[in-house]
Image (tube, rainbow, N blue to C red):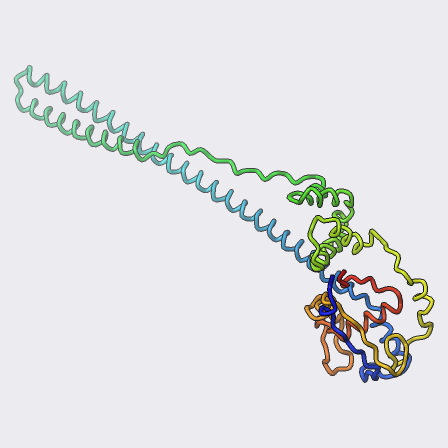
Length: 329
């Protein structure tokens, strides 16, 4: 429970705003600002975050697909190179074997000639035959060494490893969404599947989660789920005095110079809790348009600040529609 030390007091002066001026058209501008939902900007930002996340996931999937395609092409190129290398070695081996066969035949023929020359007593013919045998035996020796070298360099048959197949995604998007989540959270999501299948509701669910965490609630506790369901509008709590506040809602537009509730003269004070004060300045609630006065008091996307948050809170409380999203309990 937040104490009084966590609250800040904001005074809203009933001075005329030069930006708005006077007249019916300016009154409509004031009405428009007063009727803004402080949580709407936060919801829009979460929707944008969800879209950015979807785009990032698509880019990651595309990059993974391209990486797999590149790896497949590299593997195919390696296989082709290995085949070519094997074919070259096999061709060389065949040539060497043919050379060994020819040299062996030459050595056998020279040996037969030598034997005949020796039997005939022809020393010159025997010398020539012996020289041919020596040359043939030399070629056989060199070709045999070459054959052994080719056998040593021939690559072993390569076993092509199959790329692991990615598991096919589940056909049920809800079951795919709850993977890796706690049983309690998974059970809640299964009970509310439309907050997965509907992109807008899913973005709102993300906003509800962060809002609960921002309030200091522990995930998966009953208080956490109660807060989430209230944020999503699944539980509508009756607000005491709401009917009376609706009856007191002013029927005419608030005139320039009056405070937010329509009472002229005296300034109004509004208490902001710690969470409300933080939301007003940390970028959670921002202006969705530039300063129309041209004085650059604020720009679109700037935090609205304590005064503007207090003005909106007071107006919505008096109209009975402030949902106390940022009120600490």
